[in-house]
Length: 97
Image (cartoon, rainbow, N blue to C red):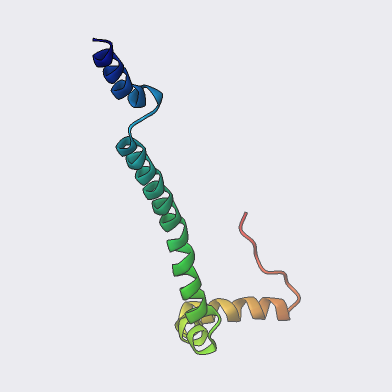
């Protein structure tokens, strides 16, 4: 009879001391998955921005291709001439408040 009680206590003891190995492994996977998802969410915008910077801003041909439509816009040209004319006459450009 004592042997049966000792066997039952020995079987129950690992469960009393800590969580089962499967539960610890599941928690580890959840923590790892959350960490990787966080890293992905933070690094993806940085990577996309760096690729855009390299191809558009840091590349002369890319920059010229991006800015040329703005510089040839008639509204932009008229505004530039208006501001340049006002500065040539010694007036300060009008600022909106």
